Image 1 (cartoon, helix red, strand yellow):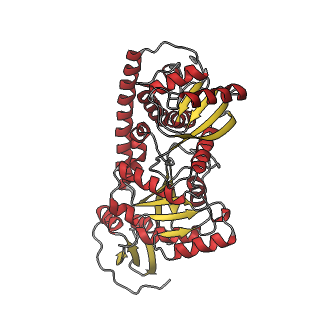
Image 2: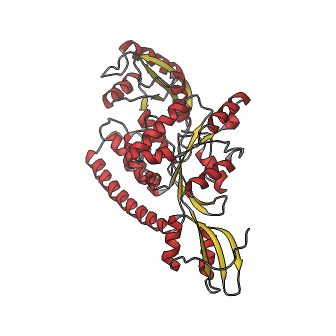
Image 3: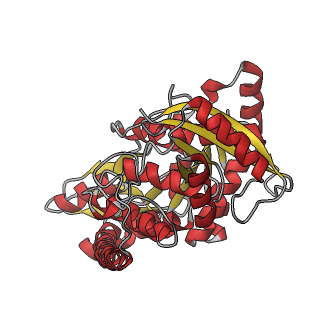
Length: 433
């Protein structure tokens, strides 16, 4: 098994001081653990000023080289940006393979993508990353599952870099993804014809989105205590407390310093967030970096084009209450009680999930109105539509038809009237339910 040394360089002037060096190192370790490798050691190391040729000074390069030889390391992961020249020189000096943070995340994505769309997106991101990088492997040109770097598979020791083949492959992938985007647009247009609002779950990776998704939908999406356990989006219908339906989407987790290649490549997937009627931001309140993670998620959403009004209206699902001690749990719940956009819960245990569903319902139906209508006995299809898509508050079965009082959002009312005709005031008594 590949033995890995994880290094987090601690910059003397780090503008991201909201996170401690140890917290960043632990996150890097969590990323590496998402691969089938053995972590030989993980450590922070000071870095006053990055060297253009080798990142570290010559003394530190020699010192780390000794550690690498002693630990019999096969791969070094540097939790930060490493330029192509730095990567080449360090690989030569240490006689090992090296991944920086971007390469590591791309490796994980390549290993996890399950759908053909996800594979195409990962492969494109990986090839864009490789364009300016001197590496030993071109496995992405040979493997059926593209995007994985050198951690196994055919072509691992191949040295030749055919740049023209690389660029040709990028053009092919972009063409295929354009078709994917068009197909997804058609599917999205079809979904807009259904009277169901969409709710998108977003959040930092490993915040518990998939666990919450499974809790809400009784689905069996992979939910593990592992970074990037979910890559491909999944959508399911849920029934809100008032009986109406909504579509909920589980999306890929975000992370600090998310490679720009991945933001661009997964834009088609994350477009579900842009068209969602409501965004639920799942946060891990047990993490010491919860506030910094929130900033990262909001930053990525803005980069994707989510407007500020939508960000102001999102619901924060403050998850993992079960991981807090009694005092911290009470404090978290008191803080959430003062914020109308926040709900504390445990997706694992189910505590607070009912309140989240109530908040989702209130947010999605805030503009709903009550209407009275009378349906003829032969209007069974319209009656079924109202029960399936709206909220029937009262019903009175009369001799000449059915008198109803229902609550409909403007969207639901518009679709009902488009299909069955204008709603006229109903006659007859309405039986209270």
